[in-house]
Every structure is written in structure tokens, then in C-alpha cells.
Amino acid sequence: MDKENQKIEVVFSQNTIWKPHYKFKSIKAGVKVCPYCKRKLELHYSLVPISMKCSAKIYGMYCSYCDCLYVTNKAAIIKLLKDKKEVEGFTLDGIELSRYTEIKKEAEKKEEAKRKEIELKRRAKFAYQTAYNKMRSIQSAIILIHVKYSSISTSYVYIVKEEIDANPENGIFFYKSVEAREFLSSALEPLKSEYGRYNGKQYHVERYSFRDKQLEKDLSPLFPHNIEIRKDGGYGSSIKNRYFEIVDLFVYSPYYDRYEIITGTHDKLENVYFIDIAKYRKFLRENGKPPITIWVGGRDFTTLNAESILRVYGYTVNKTDDLDLQKRQELLAEIVDAEILSVSSVISYLDFFISSHSSDIYALARFKWEEDKEFIESYKVNPKRFLIAKFK
Image (tube, rainbow, N blue to C red; front, top):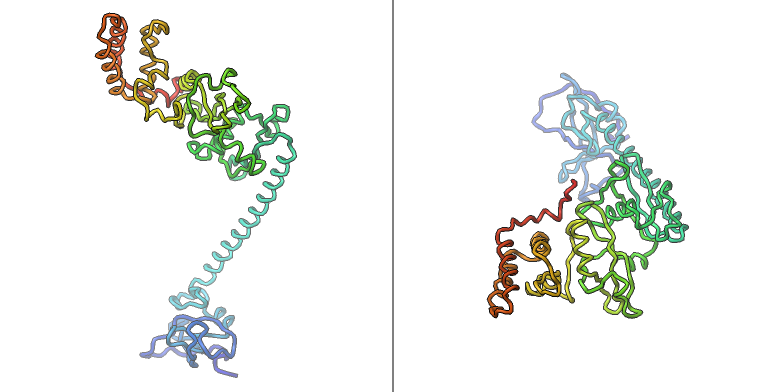
């Protein structure tokens, strides 16, 4: 029998100038070259202290380049050396022999945890597929949302287009309902960061799936990043031809921390969604400033001059419109608080109209502009006005 396969010798410890080989690796008997660097191996041994007076003489095939002693009697080495404090620094297959049992137990725990994680993922995947199949069986289902309330409490929410298919007790909600808009905003609105509250409990959106890819593509514009301002947008009077249709737009409300619905008009030829300025102002007052870009006539508010913006927003001193002092100044306050225009821009516009209408026939108009200029100059701008609800 080769020395490399012999039983481990226990010898009296001796002083020697030769350092022991600390790194052991197990291999099959008969291997003559290093499995890593492919250099030729030499028969050698290492003395491993096991007590104050004795050492274990372990034979193996040594690679000087890798500084590793390859051994074939792994089980015997472990039996003799494991968990002994004297063998600190010696390793077998990368495991510290002085802590062998502890390390193996830790590895077994990790492996068991990994197996459990794989099994939980398998079960979760099966449960989600079952829920997805259920969604497909609901005729007007739009989207499936998987929410988790705690580490063990999970639920599936279905949003449907037709109210007749709703069944709140079974987690099926009509898309216009408060519950549906809460879950939709948690899933789709970045400002919600996938969190929300339902029945007083916080939840996290794990994942969601639309009924199919085409439906997801069709519905995506109904959660707009920008909306155009056009006269009568969202009213029946805006339907000028067969290419126009009334739609429900989901717009995030900072007051309620969820989507609210604003009725708009879809111009299918230009593929744009537009609302009347009155609808936007109503949403602003009731729901706060939405995180979307507002366009006027195909242009961002910021690209229009102050006069155009004020006119579109409804500000005027014309006799025919007959806006009283309170209404005019409410409009100006709303415009600067909503950060549509700065105070300086509004003042510049009023100064221009005062100076360019010097005729006596504009005396009343000038008086109104001067009143409004005095108001806006001293007005304390409050950008948080449309971010935090008064009742909060």
C-alpha cells in the first residue's frame, strides 16, 4: 500500500526547521499531477499537532507551486483532527479543521435555507400562475396584482373593466372604485414605490400582470405623463368626429396618494389626450398638483408667453367675462402656487398691458391690472398648497 493511502501515524512532536503544509485537498488515489496547475506531484507529508506532545503525520501528494498537499484519506483526517484547537490554521477542502463541525453545520443551514427558498419560489410561482389563470377566466379582467401584507400574508387583486364582474369580497374590484385605484397606483405609479394601504394594513406589490401584452399597450396611455389643454376636452361637446372618444384618465393625486380619474378626450388621429382647462383647475383644487406635464395647443406651458398662459387659464379683465376682483386674484394665486408661472412673469405681463393700453378707453382695465399687480407683488407663494391636502 502506498504511503499516501496508509493510516495516519501519530508521532512524538519534534523540533524541525520545516514548516508543515497547512492546506489539504482530497483527491482520488493514483493522481500524479496537480488538478489545478498540472505540475507533477511529489510524495510528501505534513506534521499536524494534535496535543502538547504528539503530532499526526499525514502523507499525500504535494504541489510546491500551489503549496497544497493532496490526500486520499479524507475521512480519517476529519475523524482525527476535526474541532481540535491545536490544528488552527489547517484546512481540508477549504474548511478550517479546528472549526470543522461548526462550519459544516453553518453550511448545512445555508443549504437548507436555500432549499426552502427554492421551494417557496416554486409554490409562489404555482400560486401566481393559478391566480393568472383565474384572471383570464374573468371576462372583463384587466390586470392581476399580487400584494403581500406581511412575511406570511399574501393576496391577489383583480381589476375589471365591467362593474358586473366585480366581487370585492374575493378581491375583484371595478376599475373606478377607490380600492382599484389604490392598488393600481401602488403597482404603476413610481411615487408610490410599490407600497400602499388597504383596510388599514400596509402592503407591498410583489408583481403584476396585464391580461395580455396588447391590452397593456392599449391601456398605457390612460396613465399619462402629459395632457394637452383644449377647449371642451373631456366633455361630450368635444366629440367632433368619429376619431374622438371620451376616456377615463388615471392621474396621481398627492392629496389622496392614489390615482384619481379625470375624464378626457382622445384624439385618435393625433393620438393625444386632452382636457378643458376647467377640468384641470377642478382637479388641481380637489386633488392637488399631478406629476404630469400640461400642454397648451401642443406646447408645454413653459414655452408659451405669460399672456397666452393667463388667457388659457381664464384670467381676463374684459367686461364681457366680468371677473370680479376676488376671482381674478384667485386665478393669479393658483397660477403661481401651481408653479405654472413665476410671480415675476405675471408682473411683467401686467406691466406690459398697463403700459401698452394708455388710452382713456382702457382706464378700467388698467385699474384692474394695477389692482392685480399690487396683489401678486405682495402675495406669499405657497407651492405646497397643491401637494398637501388641507384635511391632512
